[in-house]
Image (tube, rainbow, N blue to C red; front, side):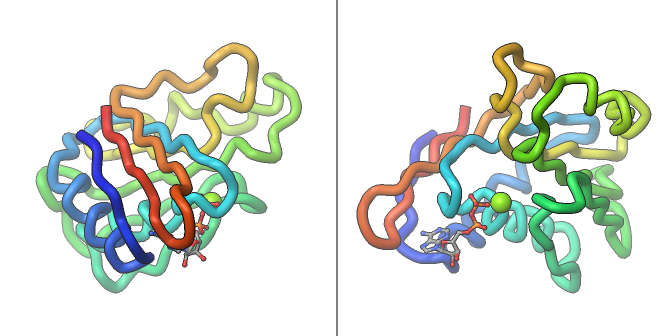
Length: 141
Ligand code: ADP
Ligand code: MG
């Protein structure tokens, strides 16, 4: 699926649309340059589940957890990870990603391709690309 968004609001709305297709236990990769809209799309995704939650960029915290007021489509929380600052694979050990994988959880990772080898196996990959001004091409595969 490929879509073009023309502003932040359209990317938020697209995030909600994509979130409606999620199933529990799913892993999602977000690929795109800085400022492409990965965190904005995640805000739209999380808002689909709980509109009172404000997503913060996980660039400095590495991992953020969002627990919804109540489960939606069997999904109770989203783990949002940013691998951007990781320089060595062994740093991943501290994250214990396997422990976070649960049937009621969706894990979304920005920059999963930061390492030569893919350390995060995603079932769904969403790519965001700048296309002049505020336009973004969003591809879901
Ligand atoms: P990333 O996480 O990929 O680095 P962010 O979501 O943090 O990107 O930032 C995207 C920035 O681009 C925000 O400041 C947002 O307001 C702006 N923006 C402009 N147009 C769009 C669009 N069509 N989709 C998403 N963000 C957009
Ligand atoms: Mg980001």
